[in-house]
Length: 125
Image 1 (spheres, rainbow, N blue to C red):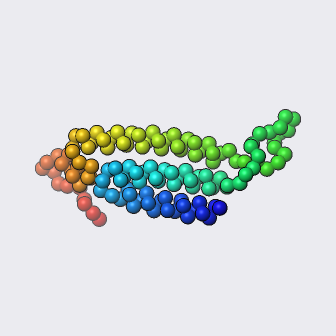
Image 2: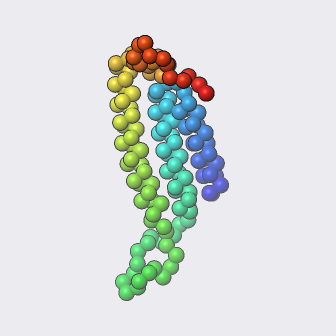
Image 3: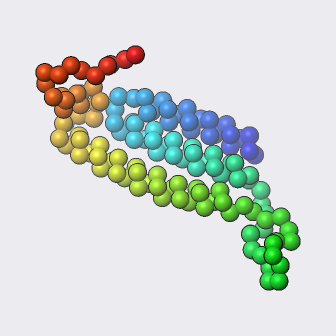
């Protein structure tokens, strides 16, 4: 089960990096969203996928008497989902506003927003 999830995480990372290397803003945003889902799935897989009892300590004990599920990865994933959704919403609004102002979603076409008379930044390495 964990090997299948590891392969799925690898596919998520590959697809997200491919999309983030695009010249179109909407593809870059989709790449960021898929990347955040890949990170969440990585955290989920790192927390081990086992069906254990909830981490509830019975009355009168200092620690659980049986093996329990680890709640930390679940809390981290929940926090990451909220943060990634808010980041995606902000980037989506930013991309839409830049499209309204510049009339293009191509990053090469957005170079018109740079001041004239100055040399261009490096286009490659």
